[in-house]
Image 1 (cartoon, rainbow, N blue to C red):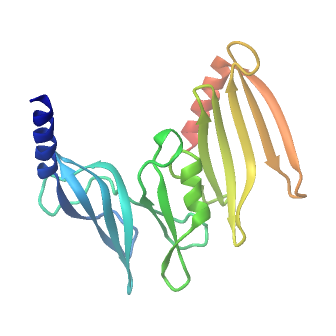
Image 2 (cartoon, rainbow, N blue to C red; image 1 turned 180 degrees about the vertical axis):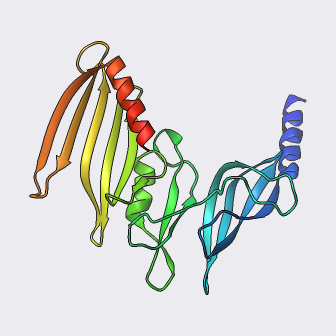
Length: 226
């Protein structure tokens, strides 16, 4: 009897879920688009679908595996937050697109396929940029002024790391690495180990130790700058 009830519950949930198509707003100037999601139920959508984007005369249809987002209540309305991200990930002056691809990153973090825009307006999946979202946590931050991609990761609760990559025609170049290890300098102290690539191609290393209070203030300052 119990197995029968479970089967009925699963069938009911499956029947309740349905596909939805939503327009996207708040896109950069010149872009229009919509998303289609196969599974929406109880005000939430997630899972397989596709993104349709138009810029000028180019229309692109990109596969997606959406992270969960709230479905708009009004018919024909757009999600409050776009499930995709449009940014210049390779700093060539053209908009690129990051499309959700489930949770393939460390600790089940969000992963993305990143498509770069070519000179003729096509969107081409970039393997190096996409791999960043599989190897680190979430999308890379873009620092347009320094032309850097900043990514974060962790190993358990005690070790956190930050990497800076610089895109070029040859791919991504790692130019900075930092590892923060809690209790790495003894109890209640954090070891910060940094490496920076110098213009001559050599690496400069620097280690320092901070108390937990000093480290908390450092993180607050860095967070405020983002």
